[in-house]
Length: 501
Image 1 (cartoon, rainbow, N blue to C red):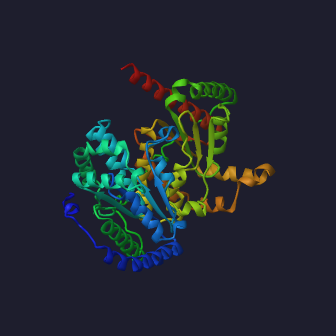
Image 2: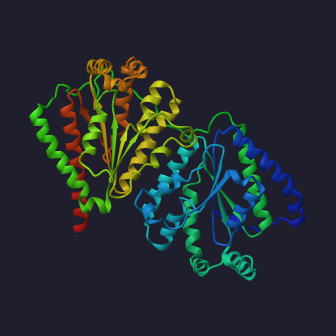
Image 3: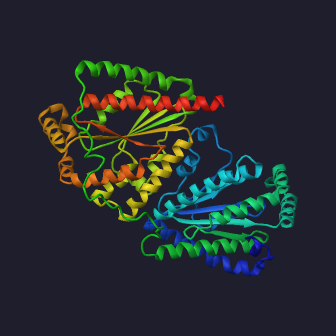
């Protein structure tokens, strides 16, 4: 895979000096076009062997373009805060906004490659991680991003010579460390692992570009021209480059579904409710203070449901069982301008709890397959692919130790109408009812179809949906608390079994 990058590519200095002014001018022009249109972000990954010119290339891109609209993210070993969250959390937080350029010096590929070389990751584990990365990059492209992945290559002799040359120059000697020579000893292993990684992740929507790093002028001019050409082509492209998504959904002909089969007459009397509420709140309080939860687990709770289904009341009962310093309630409304400049899931990644903490989402990432689908706020291709992207997202949460509990609180259309009228007639509840709530009732059947599709496609073994019969608020609140306790207890017991083994 690296043969073309060991041919001794070279450009003389005169040619380089002649070509650079024109290249710089064109890069600036296209950068400002991207910035002005704000249609897509540019994500540039700079990877490769030590001494191949990664840092010099990044510095050149900064000097050739306007650095105010470029960000460079350098990733080394994860911090304690990063280790307490899913692997991709720190990369999601660093994604550039639309119109901006983000350069990743070290990326989501760096740690898996290092872990595989050191023997800390099995081949099967590496391939699983690469599958995750491929889906992540497909999501970025589907969200509109231009993704450019550069691998700077040197032969083993070329790397040794390069390191010695850098070491001799007082201005660059600091770049060569003891670790640089240590990694030279594992050069063959790096080529083996990197070759596999590049082959598996060399996709049509985000291909690898291998550049020989021996000659500074060749490397710099090559990268500059590739970046320029890619940004020009992306600006001239009609619409986004779309990766294939799931096929259309077929609904059952007998119209029976997971919501129609719910028994909405279930209810609890006042005394039984008060007894059960106290029981499960006490149990939940103990579970979130348990050392086994605080040391390894986090809790992510998702609430979805029609307007006036009782989400707020259920959330208050959960919060009443915990210390306010331990949890965060995240209300989700229409995305802000900042959030619209990022991939859809970005605004949810930023609120993920660390180990020992709880995040409660009052509406969530399922808005893409519910309100955005029904109201036409996104294209069909966007919400169809969202099912797989959401499943990936939740899988990463669970892999990182989160217990993901998802509730759909369901009420009948008649019960919703009764609650709407009650809100209108009660002075301190009037703020809860809006014209939009009334308008949404007109699309009740469309929302039912969307909810059934959502449950069918995203209720997984790792993060199943709990459908809550919510015509009776007392019954719904107790079922929510009981489910939380059961899921947390099961996770803690599983951890105990693993530790005993």
